[in-house]
Length: 354
Ligand SMILES: NC(=O)c1ccc[n+]([C@@H]2O[C@H](COP(=O)([O-])OP(=O)(O)OC[C@H]3O[C@@H](n4cnc5c(N)ncnc54)[C@H](O)[C@@H]3O)[C@@H](O)[C@H]2O)c1
Ligand SMILES: O=C(O)C(=O)C[C@@H](O)[C@H](O)[C@H](O)COP(=O)(O)O
Ligand SMILES: [Zn+2]
Image 1 (spheres, rainbow, N blue to C red):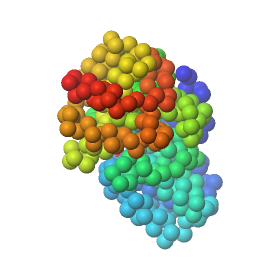
Image 2 (image 1 turned 90 degrees about the horizontal axis):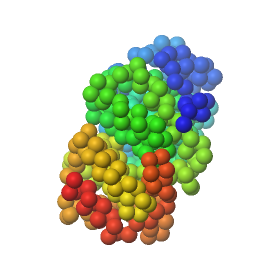
Image 3 (image 1 turned 120 degrees about the horizontal axis):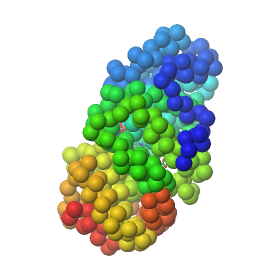
Image 4 (image 1 turned 90 degrees about the vertical axis):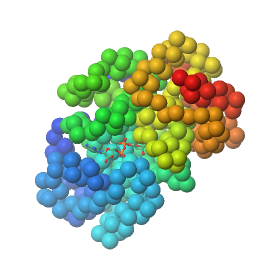
């Protein structure tokens, strides 16, 4: 997959202020707003402070963390926009990680039925995945992304310099979605990720690898924005992963999204071996590699029913079928693979005993 195929509104630039200014200029004075959260406010806003000052951009900030990807935060931002005269010709700039860009995209898509928005992703996960492709939304009722809309950002500005301050676990969390991209579509990307030195991060070489990941994400979005078909590939690892993530959060031992996706991918690779001929040897090798890097979220048999119940809420399901995206071999997927409860429990057993 070549990075040249990436959609033209996804901009890679080390000069984020210049790129942002080109966009902001197109909006009426006083109609540009900015949303961020605590950490990117402190670490990333200084890079665009000239634009903020020159165009008198009004800003607001929400509390960070997955529990704040909530309707309460959305209300807070709607209120800010309403009080400050935002209208349909306005622009919202979302600057932060995936929590912030998911929520900010949803706010912009729903305020007065939709205003323009630009994402400036500041974590690896947001740069390779969350800020792109128009899945916006919030968590609700203990379920991931339960409320949301598909609506693509008007632009995404990716500056890899922001990544120098993210901690190692959050780096790994984003790396998990890159690994997913390699597994579903791009064996060469998978190979480059396998040989990348996670112990000594080369920030210079990162932009090229990120571009390969972005190309995989963008290809699926361009071909199937509303996830009727091939976009389901991007959800590999998430049927089980989201169940792990929600379960972990509500049992008081939260895990990062990418870690949950890794554990979900292991379970779903087991299903892939059972149902789609994925190589048993590769299943063992990849499971061991992933657990070596990501550690393990321990589960017991007594957790399976609760995890299964969470999987019944997955958005790919049809009727009573739990529909998985599985892998036939590295780079190829099979979508709409429904698996019975017994097989899902067998796959959870495989994971639990690793
Ligand atoms: N919409 C999509 O397609 C999509 C895809 C993947 C994940 N997601 C969602 O994205 C969210 C996870 O995103 P995330 O991993 O970016 O989480 P996050 O936004 O919570 O950011 C992770 C942490 O990094 C901090 N941070 C942000 N920028 C930083 C910087 N430059 N330096 C240091 N720290 C920084 C944040 O304050 C936070 O503590 C989840 O809610 C997940 O469901 C959405
Ligand atoms: O872009 C997509 O499509 C994805 O599924 C990407 C996922 O990495 C991401 O976590 C997404 O938010 C999951 O969406 P959901 O529809 O399962 O809530
Ligand atoms: Zn994800």
